[in-house]
Length: 429
Length: 151
Image (cartoon, rainbow over all chains, first blue to last red; front, side, top):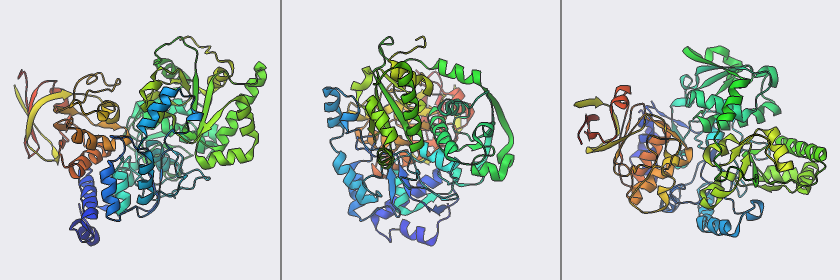
């Protein structure tokens, strides 16, 4: 790999031993990926590990070494959602709270280290950093070293920024050096599609189901999706923003999709059209039946499959303001239809701290949901499942990502509304 | 029967041992998430989605795989495994190594000071031929020798 004279100097130790080690790691990373050179990172960071759990977070010694050398990221970064220490919002037993207390015992010093290493500010925790209320919004063409898979796929596909699916720690080191190997989705060739996905459904598919179907089909390859603009319109608007965010999160977790193009909607598909497809691309058609069969194939992972649902988690990934308004409206209508005032299933909605603040400020939706018994959290439901005591909880969700990584049972949005209002699952087990 | 394959060295070294094999994407986080909390010397695969390896102890074995699939939160897992002494001896990829595996294995090597020998691009013939418990010798050049029926 060719290095600039500045990079070569850092590698030879001219800027200190610790930055030398950082550069040594990035160069080895680049050589493993067959990169021809390093390029400058032009946008803020977003990293996947916000919580201090040994084996998942970087070792404290490593973070201390970086800090002792006076290193921090060249631009500020945001992190995935905060640890679920707002126990009152999660319907937890005393045993579960004790377990979480123990698990997150090093959270405060970890938060302090993240701040010292370049965390943007104390509310910079969400898996939707690019929402306007949050503000880590890369521009088209920005070079990034992000890691959270749902964010990488959105930044690449919808915003037209460029990031590979980097792992935890390498994200931090690259942003400290301000350098990333030129490879994969950072190159024009790496952004071309190897699959043409034709969506031939009668109505707009639920994005988390369509995303999962695409992820299972293409795995880590790049799909070019045709047939959505007739439902969503052309270009990026508020509707497509939310829709493609959900689709991407599901595709990234059901497969390992880091970039997709949607005909007439996403920026590169608008500019380059079918020129994005490589020669000899593969093709698959997705119909309503394909998606129905996919959902029907999901196993029920609850220990007791006949128990009534106890908890419902919405907002994986974190909901936007529009999505929270939608849920408020749907739940309000369904409560009215059944003559009910309160939800029968304990429900938590997750969103970024700044989005929750705005939702509360707007009052209407927040009052509807709060009166119905809904609680709100800026944390992530997935982080509760590192606590083995959650294993016995009968949890439902509309998130295919949460379903993949936990034992939560998946239902489409319309069924979720009915279940949380009535407490009953009408579908056969 | 002896089969020889040549790959590209990502983390160079010479070692020998017994193979464990998966022919599907290896989810690092799902495989190791129960092993990284306790110092047992074992790393029993906890990924229920991978029947090739589920329930098998991956510690001190040579893992043969096409590539890894995630999650992106798995970067620190390798660092933790080598510190606990329960890492595999080597990772042999049939495909070009993916960014998630490359980053995690390189960080374990440079920041934890313990190398998991890593070779990629061994090819489809390698992953189709190698089987569980085959004896494997790895050379620093990236040559991998598989001794079939060496039980």
